[in-house]
Amino acid sequence: DYVVVKMIPDNRLPPRHLHSVHTGKTFAVIKWESPYDSPDQDMLYAVAVKDLVRKTDKIYKVKTRNSTVEYTIKKLEPGGKYHVIVQLGNMSKESSMKINTVPLSAPDALKIITENDHILLFWKSLALKESNFNESRGYEIHMFDSLMNITAYLGNTTENFFKVSNLKIGHNYSFSVQARCLYSGQMCGEPATLLYDELGTGEDSAAAKSGRSTDVAAIVVPVLFLLLVTLGIGFVVLYMRHRRLQNSFSAFANSHYSSRLGSAIFSSGDDLGDEDDEAPMITGFSDDVPMVIA
Figure 1 (cartoon, rainbow, N blue to C red):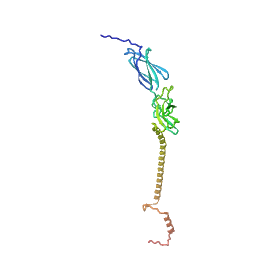
Figure 2: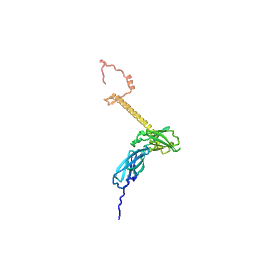
Figure 3: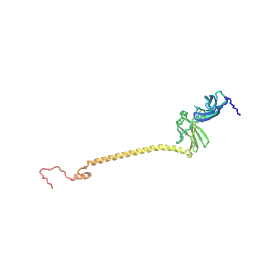
Figure 4: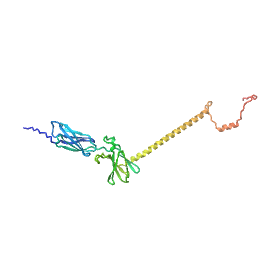
């Protein structure tokens, strides 16, 4: 023997098994089950989202007959904190949970360049990989002195570099750069951290050396380029002079060329002068003097 019992649906029960499926920077996917199995009609849910940072509320309505409900909450802020409440539209008992959205990523390629009396921090713009980041928000920089065990806030900037001065010799520092915190430091980006050893023996000494090598390369490369240009100009001048001398000699040789001998004839100036002094000057011939040919 058996008996069939049909339970009367109780719309005063809260939604069951409310939890977060996936959380991003600007959205969150939540999931819950109906107060009882297999609803025989559409059920209206009220999803209230309370911003714990801004102190604002938003309410969304979801109407469905499914036993399992999945809903995406949009237009959230990176690094935000929210309190989500789900209940039936008749204001029955509620189910609630807290959600923290993913903060903005850390800036990439944080590097240190050492100058004479200060250092420069460089990093890539966060807007290159974060569409939700505006450069006007800026970055904030923190420094940790391991010797003094002190963390200091150095300031903020909207640029992609920051100058740090008054560092003490023999101290090891850690620098962090992140998207500027909003609403009294409650919504911050992930920090990018880099160690700096003043003596050059720390983990970041390679970064400092790379900065110095970059400065040296910036000086050496132009000097080498100028040397190569100078050498090239010198070779061109020597080549032009060689061609000019060769052309001058060819012209001189052609002017003394004898077609009968098939060669050029040259004589020294001394020989020409002696012959002119010893040889008698021929002034002419007389018709009365017979010419004798031996």
